[in-house]
Amino acid sequence: QSALTQPASVSGSPGQSITISCTGTSSDVGSYNLVSWYQQHPGKAPKLMIYEVSKRPSGVSNRFSGSKSGNTASLTISGLQAEDEADYYCCSYAGSSTYVVFGGGTKLTVL
Amino acid sequence: EVQLVESGGGLVQPGGSLRLSCAASGFTFSSYEMNWVRQAPGKGLEWVSYISSSGSTIYYADSVKGRFTISRDNAKNSLYLQMNSLRAEDTAVYYCARVSDAAEAFDIWGQGTMVTVSS
Image (tube, rainbow over all chains, first blue to last red; front, side, top):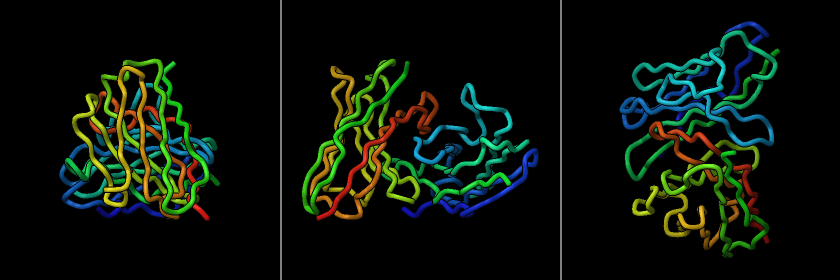
């Protein structure tokens, strides 16, 4: 199972909005509304930010939103803040036995 | 507090074995599906293995199939990963992660344990 495709890096200024794309196939992203997004700061464990494409866990800022169209999912962060600078990973369910596949990760830099 | 704590990592020679443990607390461990996810130095996340709440259903990534064995002891609130025939490419931080009540998202992660395979 190949990894989902994410841009290696994105950047934005404080207050701006950015979008990170996550492209899969009809066997994963395109078949299931089971895409999740994780934020990881250096040396820390990943943190769940979005699940089931667009739902936010309790405690996650509403500046984070998710969507999906066809085989591509997206994470949008609005009102960028310095603490948003981190690596972001998408993940999709890919059926039983394959289970899940992660994206390669995107480094967000807040300028 | 809901918590996962991994242990058992270390330095091992190629071809060697290691057993990782993950101790769960603050939630009803036996009700949750669990996973191992790893991250090689400077690389992205890679899913390794899944086990259902009862232990009756297990999945592995192709990269570890036949070498790694996931298991759990619900009486001890613990998850395990037995790793055999280790290779240099298995060098990574290994995280245990809980599957959320919502489908197929990892809502709780441990701090990770480092496994280094080198001679």
